[in-house]
Amino acid sequence: MTPTTIDGAALLDEVEAFHRRFNVFPTEAAFVAVALWDAHAHLLDCFDSTPRIAFLSPEPGSGKTRALEIVETLVPQPMTAVNASAAALFRSVSAGTGKPTILFDEIDTVFGPKAGDNEELRGFLNAGHRRTGVTYRCIGDGGQQTVQAFPSY
Image: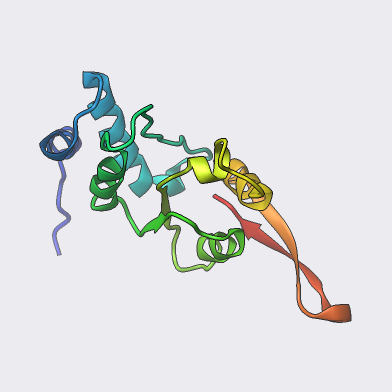
């Protein structure tokens, strides 16, 4: 089988054009940034740290969810989370079936004024930007508990 050569610049241009079909961003640079972030998600194993992307707006209905829906079609193993528990994310990320790309909609329920008691989830997400990030939990019943590391990258 002959290896296929991909023109990376042309591919990024196509990804940017795809975002432009469905999204309106405040600056031209935002389209480039989102296209690069999509590519980064595919190359996660090549990096020791990963940037986060956030679609922010002071107004509801301004397209933040739509932007996530478009990103979802372009990244590997998308996992859209609106109200995921910390335990569900621990297990999803460390399952050994590949790293999901977690796309949080309504992230203000985790980090904003409506966050409430989401300290476990915040800690897990905060640790997840570095390859070495882990969250430790006791697993098992009663006296048979063991400590398990849940990778968060």
